[in-house]
Amino acid sequence: MADDLKNKLALLPASPGCYLFKQGEQILYVGKAVNLQNRVRSYFAANIPSPKVRALMARVDGLEVILAASELEALMLESNLIKLHRPYYNIKLTDDKNYPYIRITLNEPFPRLGVARRVEDDGAKYFGPYIGTGAIRQVMGLLRKAFPVRTCHLNLPLPRPQRPCLSYELGQCLGPCGEKCTQEEYRQVAEETVAFLKGRYRPVVEKLNRQMAQAALELQFERAAELRDAIRDVEGLMARQNAQQVVGVDQDVIAAAQDGLDAMAQVLLVRGGKMISAESFALPREGAEPLGEVVSAFIQQYYEGRQPPREVVAQAAADAEVLEAWLKDKRGDAFTLTLPRRGGKRQLVENALENARDALARRNARDQVVFERTIGASRELAAALILPEAPRRIEGFDISNTQGAQSVASMVVFVDGEPAKKEYRHFRIRTVEGIDDFASMNEVLERRLKRSLAGPEKPWPMPDLILVDGGPEQLASALEARDSLGLFVPMFGLAKRMEEIYLPNEGEPILLDRHSPALHLIQRIRDEAHRFAITHHRSLRSKATVRSRLEEVPGIGPARRRALLAAFRSIRGVKEQSVEELKKVKGMNREAAQRLYDALHNDPARGENQDA
Image (cartoon, rainbow, N blue to C red; front, side, top):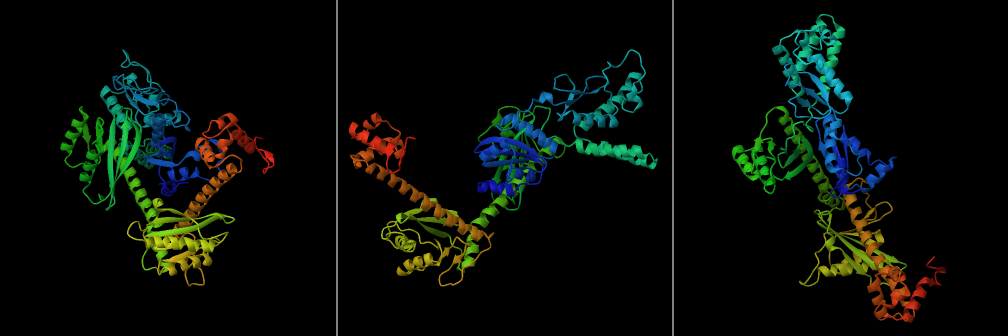
């Protein structure tokens, strides 16, 4: 797992929201969770039973999260993101027409409540969508308890009054069909219903609380319990649905979080009434500046190279009128800059602000993790090795060979705890015959340190600290090379068995805590030096094998060997050719091509037919 992905997993919030698994820039899967921390981490468990999830996680190398105000909002946001990106591993969701809406016919003298599967331009008000018929039944039940609005299909007013239905007797309708109320009284209740559905449900909760208290005073405990349950349902079900709005608006919602040092700006993109994306932007050194100025400056930079939508909803802004005029000019059409203080748009700003705070916290924690793994680890290592200051340039060395053949050494360089790969170097061992890692280490260290003592042409920087892969013997060989040049460069050895650190002239090794950042740093240097040496050694061995195989064939000299490898890239490529193809290579003839073909396909040294 990549370090960036590990850091993101470690910093996940325990909040509702959506998560996007990615491979590069491609979105593979979108999911929602009540608790992002628990849900996302479950995908990285050791044993995953689902083949589909195993296939997904084998490709994942990136993760993004978008916080939501509630589980319902997260679900609606998930739906929007899936429809927008169509991720490969998501089940295709049905269209919005299968999600029910609450419909209230305000265009009628006596409005009625109903359920609709699609939004139409018929003068009625639509609210939703709601996820599943169960949720909408609960909401409709609450509405009828709190607001006695009719659900029948009568064309009111009637020519003559009629006896009201059972809903009137149950207190779930004002009985306009029987002229039990005036049109003004009924219209007031209908308007209260609309206000409730728009999210202004606090007056309703207060009204239900008063009724519950009155029922309790009158010892109507069953009624009080029903009202208590109604209050709980109202507060649970009528959570603001910021991720989905019925009105098809295009908005960018912008907020910024500050921590005294840095700031983080967040942009929520709402298109066609649906929140489709969230972007965060780090603003270094803006953590203590006036919020309005920070947001205004960010808006100017953000829209410098792009066209704004119909409306930008911002947390704050300095010189709002000037900024609005500038954005309107960039859009070339009607435009509004809104700085809401309350209501649904303020809820959108609060959602953006919560995402900005989370992104800023994760960035700060990530920066802290990087610091602890690099500069912090170097400082801790200096304390463990009793160095006067933290080493900036640390070099690691390793030896690799096969029974003494093709012996090579690697030098890797870490600067401020990070690999500086452009400064990595390989060494071919020149003076040592056979297997002698100690003498090889001595040769390599002497050659390397001499490069720092070279003339002004191309000297190598002198290291602050040298890590030798091995125990006291390897360290002693390296120290001998250093001392022969009259230098003093701190050195230590790292043995693999117990991760012991050996210091010059110290009999007992040092053992660091296995969770220590300093130990993790030197393990990374040691492992990188080993990888770099092994990779180079394998490359040399492979080239030598190819050369030796071709040299064994009579009539294939250096010129023909070079021409064959230039034409077919490898011994396998040569072997895959027919005699006719081999004959076409520059310098080859039929006789040489036939000998080469026979040698590669019937190798007696292997005792097998290589075509089998």
